[in-house]
Length: 110
Length: 114
Image 1: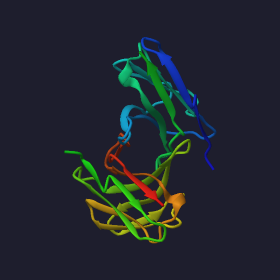
Image 2: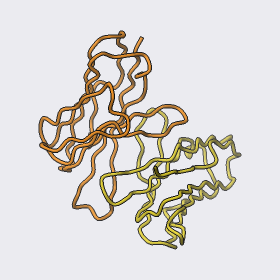
Image 3: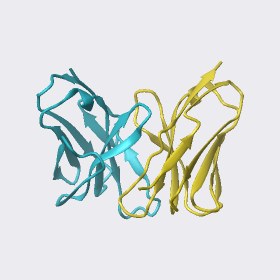
């Protein structure tokens, strides 16, 4: 089956610090999506990536689709308290199937 | 109002009871999904439906059943709930015409089986 590794599992950072998380897989994907889940809510799309090597920004968030199509990273710059939550990578295989990483739980200390 | 609405948002039920989680969407999407979230395990697919007449098992369908009553409605049933089905359940939708391949989630239903 397809293996998807998301790291780190959790992070505790100080407000203002930059954050980096990534997902790697043994399989090739056509699309990488990054979602954020706020406490008590459903995941919400942050960034979508459609081309190998693509680098996309959304405010303080930057994500890249790895050139091998097997990985992706998400960076958050100058973190703020509302960045707290769980971040999921979700590569799309091109059929029905979205595979979700196990999530990176982020806590921001003021 | 949310585009993907789940009811109930929270439910405590006893072992052996039948429980239904309902989902409705106003996005006009043809595809609907039920996921389960457990700590440290991410989101796992229970069932998915491409349209009203197309329902398929996901990776963890045992102990669950679904019904696609209309394009906008997709319900998940636990015929005889057991404690290890205690989890956060999400309904989601996507549009087969969406080249962006985005999936949209409801707010989740917390289910506790005691």
